[in-house]
Length: 201
Image (cartoon, rainbow, N blue to C red):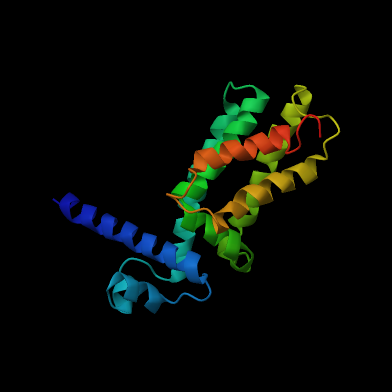
């Protein structure tokens, strides 16, 4: 008999998390207050505490849920049967899809991770950074080993190039724009694998 009451509660909780994510992405975590979230949700600040004990709990749930999904996809790519070049392509496509589907979550991580890491409860973000590094370094090394990537690549530099050029897109990409996230990813992959100079150049 409690199921009908639980579903609206979960729905409201998800709605509040979405509102908070939008504000955190727009204003920054530090600059967003519980009152800001409550006002945007059309409720009193005290009512928010019926669902969450703090804004830290809200951003924690937002980031954990998003990252579990993203790294689950990375794990599937690494464990899959694609060739090394296709795996690297798939990882780039998945990353741009994350920016499209979870723009607020990506923006929060990009903008506020350093601040959140000053709190013990967010120490897992450092683990996720390391895990991300290992994913990309593995993909790159496998590509070199298979002969589809240049053997003289500086792996750390190449990883940083991919990481920074992919995730910075959250600052300018807007869903519904001139190009879809897949088209942008494909263009990015073309630049990554083929460069920007003509063969004659």
